[in-house]
Amino acid sequence: MAAEADKVWDVAIVGSGFAGALIAHELGKGRKNVIILEAGAGIPPNFNAYIRRFYSAAAKVPESPYTPEIFGPDGLSDPNIVNAGRPTVLSVGPKGGFGDWTDPKQAYLIQKGPRPFASTYDRIAGGTSHWLGTCLRFVPNDFKMKSQYGQFADWPIEYKDLNSWYGEAEAELGVSGDVDEQTYLGVEFSPGYKYPMRKIPNSTTDQYVDKSLNTDPLAEDETQFLGMRTPPTTIPVRGVPAARNSEPYRNRRACAGNTNCIPICPIQAKYDPTITLNDARNTGFVKFAERTVASEVVVGQNGLISEIKFIRYKTDTGQRSESGSVKARVYVIAANAIETPRLLLMSKNGGRTARGVANTSDMVGRNLMDHPYYVAWGMSPEQIYPYRGPLITSGIGDLCDGPFRRERAAFRVDIGNEGWNFVVGGDPNVTTLDFVNGLNRSGLNPRSNSPLGNEALFGKQLADRLNEKFTRQFRCGFLIEQTPDPDNRVTLADFNDGLGLPRPQISYNLSDYTRRGFITAHRMKDLLFRKMRLTEFTRIDPDDPSRFEEEIDGKPVSLNYIGAGHVMGTCRMGDDPKQSVVDKFQRSHDHKNLYLVGSSTFPTGATANPTLTIAALSLRTAKHILDNDFRR
Image (cartoon, rainbow, N blue to C red; front, side, top):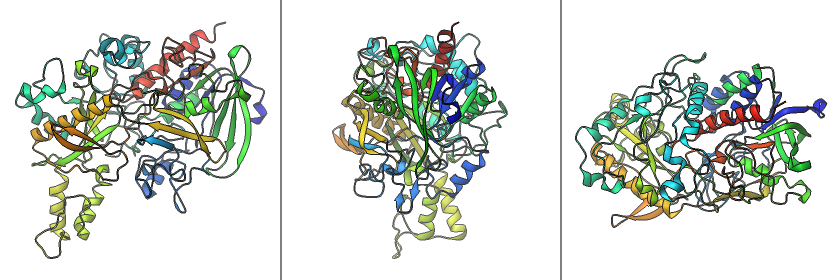
């Protein structure tokens, strides 16, 4: 790149996840010269490099197939020396122990609390390759929370503005789904529309949940607590659209039912952004610069961005190899909802932009959101056969909108197909070791009448016991809507990474509105478990930093959450430049040749996984750039 220091590109993009990859591809097809700066490692020559890392990883967590290394010689890698660090789920542990969420030598994010921000992300080509694949559309009222319910803010666009773009995104990602099943709560499709592929079939677990909830009508007094317009007497279990092939599509094979979509699909039946990145590069107009960290966005004349400075490195730790800058006509920051505000806030321009670039509103970094994920698990009285098929094939979405949103957060319900996998620290391995070694980490091998205590089994007796236990495991999760709170924010820490750049500092809490959503989710869990006749095994570690207490129906209840991986907010879109960072096309209010894209621009988070909406907005923004920034 040094030889091209004076080259002016049509577009420079920072970040190669969903938003960056999709925009680069559209611009490349439009014959625009594009350069992508990617902070992490590039696309491996073949997918097996990721698979080998996953198989050999000491901890099978979402980040394990991807660089940089999670572990160093003395435990977790020290983020102070990693050149392009990232958070890991292993660094949201209790204070004073392994993975202490407040320890800057273990946790990349400098967490100021009062509660931990529990979601993670990757810094590699393709960014969020470890995603699940869920591709839900937002429901129409998700875009109008202020006007409909007096809460939060309205988006500057409506569902109808994204309807066709949702279809374009579903075609690009390759989504399997059923239109009739997804037409609910006001969701509409273009006339004659069909998903690119038929839906992934419901699992046997899905079918058992549906039978339990809907064989007999629910009584109105059983569902009154939900606060719907009318207490529902049925609660549909609907298939979840997913960017996962139900049949061969675009040279990708059909899903084989592996239950490790997170962190990696071993046969690439699931879409990930490296697919679009390769398509973008194949246009001949897109260049990719890996291990190249954007360090400052430079403002030139008339408030236009004139260049982006970068630092390049060769290895995950060690000295930098090169510094430089790229110049372009248009700039796109697609670095996710934590790294995008971090870059903008680092860009002081010698004091000319003291609050950072694109930040005259003082809104950059504010309104950080996730879907705090409440998880519960139990044992069914009959075999429901988990560990078959993708991680999630169905869920409950009909409860995510209604008049209750004036008072409390909405939620969606995930139905897990992977048994107790992550909730007990790695089943089926944990339960197996319990019965082999006479332990009880899973809770399924309590002390027996034997003087030896917990049972230690082998041979046929062991196999029979495991078959009996594993086939009855059930897990569900609740994605809770989060308040866009300006005090939940990303700022710059006093701690630096291996390149000497300030690390992200996070302030995070749950509002009363969001906590009331947890309370209703807990009641919904009780209803679901009662109808399914489950024996509950949910447990919360007393040292869990996400734990909090609520009184529910006159009883004290401990609740907690994990991260959903849905990092949103921090660069809100809106019509008012004083209250938002970008306009409805994700263009900066302050700098007309700067776009900030991805879920950082979401004014609200709703309950649907954000990826499909990221993709739809990105395709819409790419067309806007082609139509408006390159007019002759």
